[in-house]
Image (cartoon, rainbow, N blue to C red; front, top):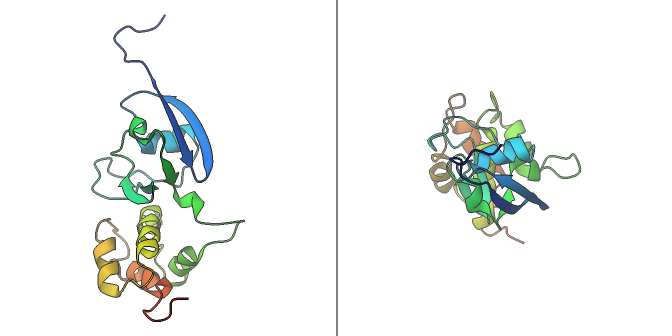
Length: 165
């Protein structure tokens, strides 16, 4: 017997990491919850669930979004990129490699959010300088690295102005 006080589920059709998905979700469920529980994309971590920490950052139609604050229903029709989209054929991408090389991983809890922020920044500005990188990463919280290693990792991948192909 269905509960007449419970709102009906809403259909959510989205593409995550190039794969189309269709789920029925309660109207109050977050995108983070649907990514993790329904789509098994558990690389998206959930920390504060208030949008303060940024660990749940994913790209929605190319823009960084706190997936804990976005309702899954709002993502209907969207293209979502999670940290799982970065490695290809089991090989880390240059940003992931740089995080590894520069010790920007530490405990790893915040890493997915920083990788997605950095991915968007470098797509928007492949020649981002240290100041722009610092401004970008200040949107997320890290309790281990003090941000220096994260900034170093991003700076190592950024193409210096004049060296663009």
